[in-house]
Image (tube, rainbow, N blue to C red; front, side, top):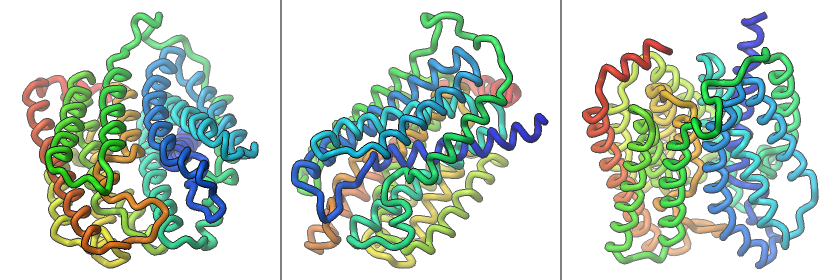
Length: 425
């Protein structure tokens, strides 16, 4: 019976993380449909990044708070959050209420991501399912969003995922989480008997890095040509990532730093419109990378490889702007590194892993340098190459800074602490 419950928890955690990711990456609607009004487009362009940022912070807060009441409460909270997502997508939302719907969607997705993480990261099989589901949510959501925006047409797959997360996937997930909730054995409260004893440092860490990334992303646009502004934005994001890493216990900040570097480099590479069949190799190498990271951990090597991918994005413009083999190679490489990074680093607390996954859903400053909204790319080839180079340089700088921070963190936090954590696992 225990084996079957572990399998059920693993599938439930994977589905929950994937659904939460799809809701966070594109809340309710992309706004790129032909019948989207100017008001709707304005509301979405302003509120979507902020709603996603709020959802990530809520995810970390939920992960911290839910652990106080045990796994059963965590599965119950995840079930309720999924019910809210289903309701939000089934109830018609006029354009004047789209901003509110986006925030409701993101907050519910944040609770789902945090609560499912609190339940799944208790032991290894569901933890692996949770990590895989979160990474799949990022990959599939970003792919569907890019194709729909650039081609302006909807294939069979795009129609199936026209509303993210699709209701036909969310409803079964809600039922699965409800079963996990019912079958989860009752247990006493966790090791935090009062709210005063809750570890709120991860929440502060999330607020620092998420807010900084969101502000910098809003300030930088495709028209930003002042190098000083870009450098200042890069340093701000890097400083926030380092502060957040120091706020997290022991070496948990390593995964946060890797996530910041991955998000930046991924935005510089994997933004090209990919044919749907290419999702298969991308998801395959992602899974392989996760399995490799679980077997042999080397986070510094992962950080070095991320910087190398940034150089690849700079030297091979085709990896950023077209549906070419170089774009597929870059996409597969970043997917493999994402899987490896999350498999290689085991955080001491649940909130550290939830924060790192959440950072992959936030629009980065690197992405805003190349963002083109609902218009096909490129309208202005010369400007496109220039913006792509700026984005690649910013990704390289962030990757190198995070690499240096990871090395410094390993020196500041004793090695024996990491060994103790691995033994406890």
